[in-house]
Image (tube, rainbow, N blue to C red; front, side, top):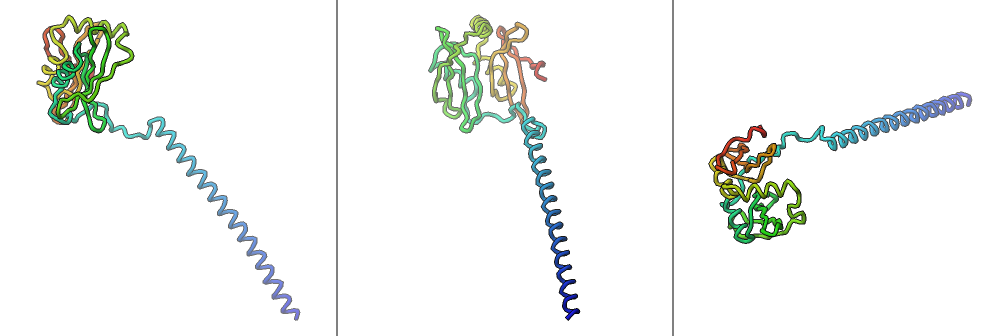
Length: 211
């Protein structure tokens, strides 16, 4: 009888000790899990913050376009089509590759109103035209417009001249220290180029400022 009591007592003590050990073990596992969860959460937060700051973003993306516009309509063609629809002075043409893709031509009419005309890259048809609320009221815009109106080379001719360097994806005005000139961007062989086209002579030179 005493032996049975002793065995029972030892067994109870072992179970009690085991239960205590298990409880501590469970507590350790929970603490470890919490520490790991907290560490993972902090790491995720750090990654999110770094992504927001741009530290871990893909720096391989480049703003310079190296792909030619889809369709057979050139920048010069798009400008001609836009001016036929909305007569005036073309100040810029840019291929907007936003899915379907279209040329966007900026035209200033005689009354000073500025319009954005969208041209289909495959057919040259006008997809739409919208008046710009700013209407070129900025002093620099008025100065550039005045320079263009007295120039021998217009936007369409500038696009044609720059096409000798590659496929034109954008043409517009550039005011470099008071000297206004046409600025054109081209792509050729997967490479991006930037050029200046003189307002008077139409001479094309490389834009060294953008190297």
